[in-house]
Length: 235
Image 1 (cartoon, rainbow, N blue to C red):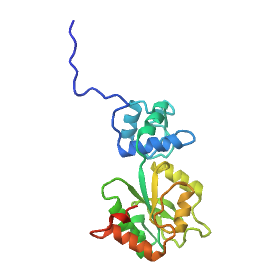
Image 2: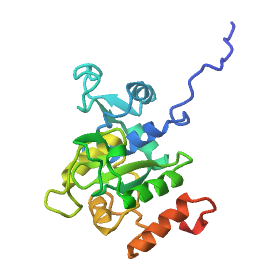
Image 3: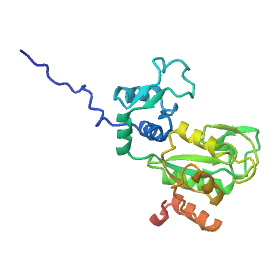
Image 4: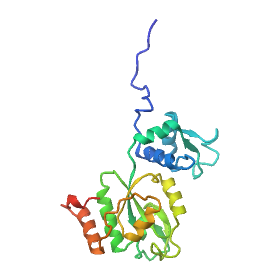
């Protein structure tokens, strides 16, 4: 009786198979979601891998196709094995920078281009330097539109955090789940109003600028993005 030799193509156990950053973030977000839903922003190819490892399962038999590829409707739910796995995976890291009153003189533009205020630009440069190794995701916290990626197209507006019409906690919570950052370690590169807004979702966030004047804010940013920056200025 012969035995087949093991090959290198054998799948590793779910407990040891490595996960991508988006898969880890998705599991963490699903673990804190009231219904256990996996964020629909996790790419299908990576969702399939999670399902093959038993970390998520389809909500219905036709869960992959019934809403189409662009739907934000939940299609997968985390399993008990997925919750166990999330407990041993590192949390995603997010750096939040504020929007600005200074904007391009156009009706609509990508968020990464719309904001041109000097404070925002300095905060963006600092966040880019702090996340240059790929360890953190940089998001914009807009007083009107909430959590934005650079590519998200937005309308021109005039609103500051705390003003009437500021984005609600409910909207921020939905956005945080969709982006897979609802269970992230968050650092805010902004003033008090924006930190307070972010705390409605992440009460334990880090705010290295707390209690400092705007001059100290700008010095903190510059220490991160200019050559020879001080290690003590890191978040």
